[in-house]
Length: 70
Image 1 (tube, rainbow, N blue to C red):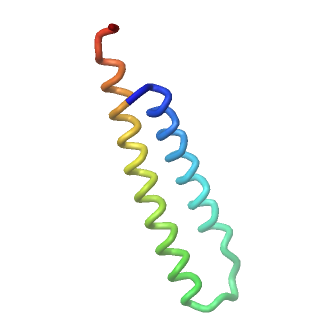
Image 2 (spheres, rainbow, N blue to C red; image 1 turned 120 degrees about the horizontal axis):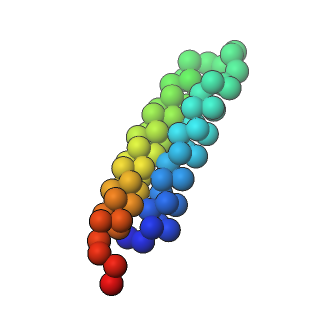
Image 3 (tube, helix red, strand yellow; image 1 turned 120 degrees about the vertical axis):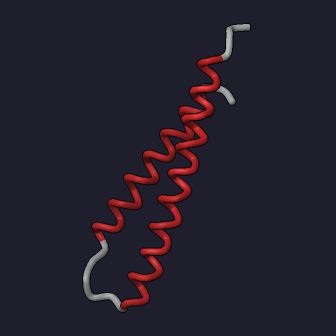
């Protein structure tokens, strides 16, 4: 994996975490419970995906920097 791809994955993961946590705090009151359940599940799944992408990106970044130059 190139450093550009690894950096993109790390940046995407950071953006996803920021965006979904921000959405969670900005949900307005007054909706039915099902609305909050669905959005809570969406937030949880997307944060898990962001963590997975971040780990893949960080591992790719670390492996790329340990390889000797060709």
